[in-house]
Each structure stands twice: as structure tokens, then as C-alpha cells.
Amino acid sequence: MSTDHPLGTRVADIRTFLTEDPQSWDILWKKKVTPWDSGEIQPPLRQVIESGDVPFARGGRALVPGCGRGYDTIYLASALGHDAIGLDASVTAVEAANELVRSESSNPELVSKIQFETADFFKYEVPEDKKFDLIYDYTFFVAIPPSKRLLWGSQINSLIKPGGYLITLMFPQVPPRDPQPYTTGPPFYSNFASYEEVLRAGGSEWEVVLDKIPDDATLLDAHKGKDRIVVWKRSA
Ligand SMILES: C[S@@+](CC[C@H](N)C(=O)[O-])C[C@H]1O[C@@H](n2cnc3c(N)ncnc32)[C@H](O)[C@@H]1O
Image (cartoon, rainbow, N blue to C red; front, side, top):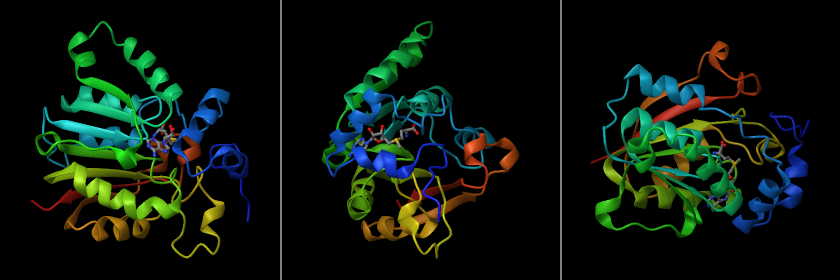
């Protein structure tokens, strides 16, 4: 089986730099080895928000763990009027995201809603009244070591409000019975079951309110046939 990264850089090359320490991602950012960075808002996220299929709150709070350069964080603030926090363990990623937000300086109201923070998602805490209406995960779940997935589930459960939504844009999807799933990814892999298992283990009930394989014609080239977007609602 090929270990080629769907975005063009070999998974093995990326893994060479990564350790269990999330700071190791900063090496990739500093070396500009960021093949996941599509340079734009993810089309499936835009489609889900614009479709109105899910009654997302307006003017709430959104969190984007492993936000990278922050295109989608800025979009959530703009499209939903949310106060949006993008978290990334890499200081270089957060600098890049802050640079991107500066390009929105003609819209100070939007800029005031966006915050990028250098932080480890697994140590991130907020008080009860600051829990999130929406969390969006795109290529963060597949970036963390699989041994941390249970912890990802419990963190999502503890950071999201009862009745809040989680959007998982799953990429790259692999068949559930892929005999060597760890050879795929940026740098790992995902499928529906891998999210469901750890979310439900986190203690809350989760309802799938939207589950869509986006039309390939609407996807960026590297994503064709590899995206699935699922919106989960935490029971109130
Ligand atoms: C594959 S990249 C995806 C970035 C972004 N979602 C995008 O698609 O452009 C994964 C990101 O997660 C960040 N990251 C990895 N481990 C983290 C952690 N424990 N806490 C916060 N960010 C982390 C990395 O620095 C990297 O920017």
C-alpha cells in the first residue's frame, strides 16, 4: 500500500518530525512543510453552514482546535457571528493565523470576534459559562497520535455546551477495514467509527444531525473521494 500523503507529501516524511509532544508540529510549520494548508475555507464547511440544514446558533462561541492558518475559524466568525477561538500548539501557525486576520482589518467588527491562541488542546480549559456552542474539527483528529483519541473525545465532551454542535470534517476517510490504516493520513487516518467511538465514550449522548459525502465536483482536487462531513449534536 502506498504511503503517499493525499496532499502530495509522504506521510513518512511528516512523521519523521513528529513526536508525542505537540510542539513538534512547530518544526513542520517552520520548515513550511504544511501540505494540509489548502489556502482557503474548506468547501464542505461552507456548504453545511450556507445550506441552513442545521440550525446553528448565531452570535455564540466557536472553537477550532488545531486551527492552522485559521481560514475556517475566520469563516465561522463571519458566517455565524460567533466569537471564534482558533487553538494551535505551534506558535508559528498562530503567527500565520494572526497575519491572516490582519488582512481583514477593514472589518474591525469581524476582527474583534476572532482570537488565535497558542495552546495544547489537551490542556485547554474554560469556565462553565464560556463553554462552546460549536466546535469544528478538520484534520486535527487525524493529526494527533491515535493513543490520544480517547482524550480528544473527553475534551470535546467537556468543552461543548449541552445542546451544542460538533462539526467533524473527516479527511482523509479510509475504508473501515483498511488492513493498514496507519499508512494513510495527514499523518493518521479517520473513519466515522473512530470519531463515534471516542465521542460516545466521553460521557454524553450525541445525535448525528447531518452526515454527508460532499459532491466531488465541489471539492478541492486532493479531497475528491476522501471527505465526509458529519454534524453531531450533544444532548441537552
Ligand atoms: C494537519 S494540521 C491541520 C491544520 C488546520 N486544521 C488546517 O487544515 O489547515 C494539524 C494542526 O494541529 C496542530 N496541533 C497538533 N497537536 C496539537 C495540540 N495538541 N493542540 C493544539 N494544536 C495541535 C498542529 O500544529 C497543526 O497546525
